[in-house]
Image 1 (tube, rainbow, N blue to C red):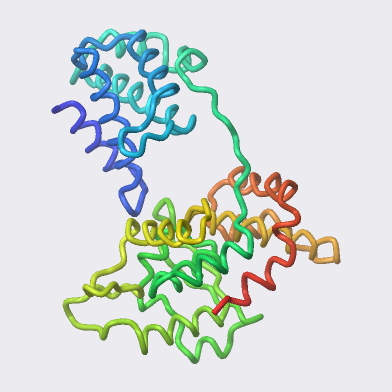
Image 2 (cartoon, rainbow, N blue to C red):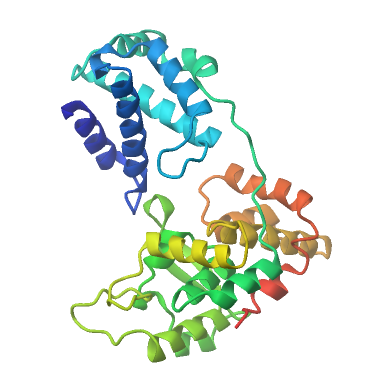
Length: 326
């Protein structure tokens, strides 16, 4: 396993991810590829273009081992691309040679794109209804309930919520000078970039109150994260995700934690576009791009399409988002 390990090590050095999620994705793809080769009785050195095609077909038609669910087309494509990238890298560096690597480096990975990729089904980001959100919050335990509110009201990603530090929270004096009852918090966001996260004063005040009355008292051995569990460790991404799934299942919802971010984006965009029609000169998409921390405007563009198919669900956006449900 020397070659896969070296491949992942190089990707880790090159990655901009602040959580290691990028390398984890590569590792998951490689493990899936290695398991497939094992079922075929093949070594990495024996992989061919045909093997990659069979791998694509297996992902497209098969089910995941951990939950017996079919692979999403985007996940299947990512696994195929990871296998192709690995063999291209191994062939070019001379660490490992294979018929597949020779084929890819000679003709290029794009030559197999139509043949080896699963057709990607594009879906609109789903908006969680107000009724669903209220129900989920009603059964959420502390401090997860407050963490869900951060996701909904600021559009923050899971790792951004979990990595929020005490030093990031504005002081009471700072809140007194907040313009339009909004404050900007500078923190490390996706891609290792230090960007602002905009939050309403009411959310900051609720979080400060949690830190004073509910959060375990800070000790030198404790992490200085805002959200701490009963064992006095920082709440992990996995724990936050699992708690949301527990709450959603309890109320009969199939919503996911990441849908809070979709809900934030779609509702904020709806409000911004209505403000533009009323004479506001700001660019709604550019404003949302900054709020979401997107590096590319194309990523933000998907919410324009989502808005058109969810207009009823996003009515009265900010009145709900910034009027936090207690």
